[in-house]
Length: 335
Image (tube, rainbow, N blue to C red):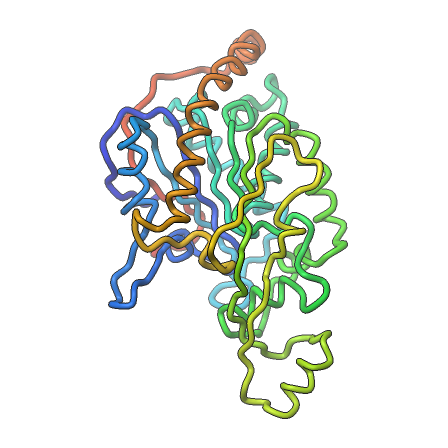
């Protein structure tokens, strides 16, 4: 567990940030300026922006082994990662007596699929048999999706899983258990889509999608466009192109309740990287957070009240709240 000191405020909401494929709990959310300075906005921008509107929160960055081609490659499946996300958050909240604190998830790319998996598992948890896991569902009021491939990648070009590998410029050994779910028509992805849709009315969703193409290095990639194949044949050392990693059609969910689709002036990687508090996209995300926090806190209290009798019968204890910090929930090697 790693911590950064944040504004020491009495906690009201918990915000969880979850990175995507080949991502990192810090780098995914860090903007590097032309002069080399960095802006890690969950620490450098977000606490003050919320405080300016009278909102108090605790901010968490969840880290997991999402490497598919570099470093130590985890053998965990997609579902294993989803279950681990749920257990880590649920047990941490139990230990600190924070089960009733309202939750907002901010998830990028694959991280959004893991959040959906975790919430569905939490929903299936019995208040009598597993009140610790059930508490996450009960306390979640909003989910912010950033370029999440709800329906797979762009099948007209190259696979999303392969594109994710090539964003980091390599294509070697991969964990196919994670990458395969990103393919269009994958049965596990369809199951994730269907199971979450059934419970989506319990949350407020905001789905952010990319306006711009993402630079991608093409290495050992299956190319389905003839002109791209010809280009690589003629110029084998010119292997940089741009791609819409997650098209709008995949980044939004038809039929999902309480969802808003919002474009950002970013490519796929930049969806969760902001240079300053003046970044228009950062302001747009903050506006959404402020509105959802103001609305969500009220109905979370009502939701818990409805479950209170069953929770007491199952022996789930509730505790007082603590002080706020930015934390890293991490099941990988410490940085």
